Amino acid sequence: MSLSDITSFNCLEPRVVRTIREAFDDCVSELEKRRGAGVSDDVRAKLAKRLVDLARHGECDFQKLRSAALNALPF
Image (cartoon, rainbow, N blue to C red):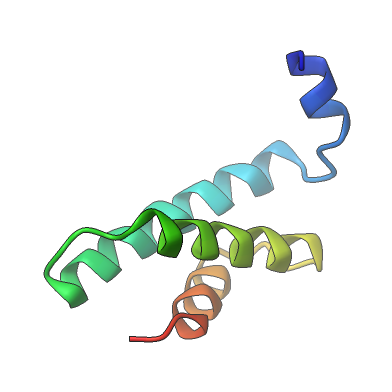
């Protein structure tokens, strides 16, 4: 699959993708602090999916994305 194939299906603006990435990184850091350990690939995948789903439904505020994603995960 070429880069153009991947980006042709991307319905999110680059600024939203950057916000998702920043929220993801911040959430992972927060989870590592709370748990005192690394974050599993499974949790990372759930976190990423939640962030993308929220963004696809119109949410693009960093704090709202971060809060909703963290609140969706069990502790």
